Image 1 (cartoon, rainbow, N blue to C red):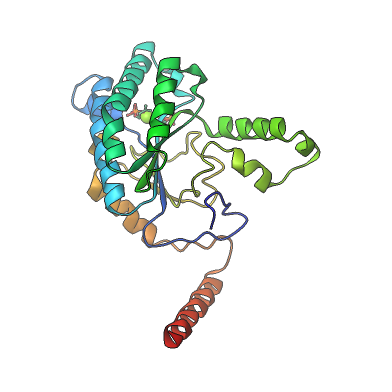
Image 2: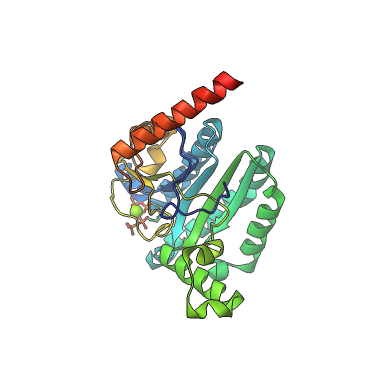
Length: 265
Ligand code: IPE
Ligand code: IPE
Ligand code: MG
């Protein structure tokens, strides 16, 4: 199965371990406030959580991890906070790239990078190139990302490359132009920090994703918290528009197929 398929057009393969986990890492500011520390202390601690969660995802055989690090709306924050977030991002890139590569992790960034300093963009693109052939886990950082931006840029790029489509196009025409066209759609979405909203994250790709919200603040999130989310995911019945009865018939038909195959082996 090619990766960039649409859950609204065909039923994706899903297993006990989600292939793709997408996380809104929220609650850093409140974590710091609870400790009478400045908000940026929460962002610093968040880096440690990112390291632990990347490792935990790799250990569990998750293929794709996508982390929302900075939204297209986060520029509205106080200048000082935005500036610290950028510095932390650069520091993390510099400190972690070689380690990611050594651990066989493919690194990707999605988002509108036109607002970033050329030096950072170059560093990101070099990191992506360095790790392009790695196969253990694809780690995507969403930076200055917005779901609406993605849909708009995909449409613009598609029409620029295929002017003949201006009279009409299909989902399949648009999909290769999304920023994350290299990944299957997320199976599991996690938002920490208690808010129950999508905040302009992967709007298109979350069409059939299982949603999981936890009050745990991102700096407190760990491997155990990830396992709770996966456990909840496993209890879901992903119907993709079908009925529960249809799914049961399907799975018993699949079981029967497997028995026949085993017997003839
Ligand atoms: C998430 O934590 C990090 C970013 C949005 C960059 P917040 O900074 O939003 O933390 P809260 O929601 O204020 O606690
Ligand atoms: C969402 O968090 C964006 C990131 C985690 C990067 P916010 O804390 O900015 O979300 P809202 O604005 O409260 O929904
Ligand atoms: Mg927040």
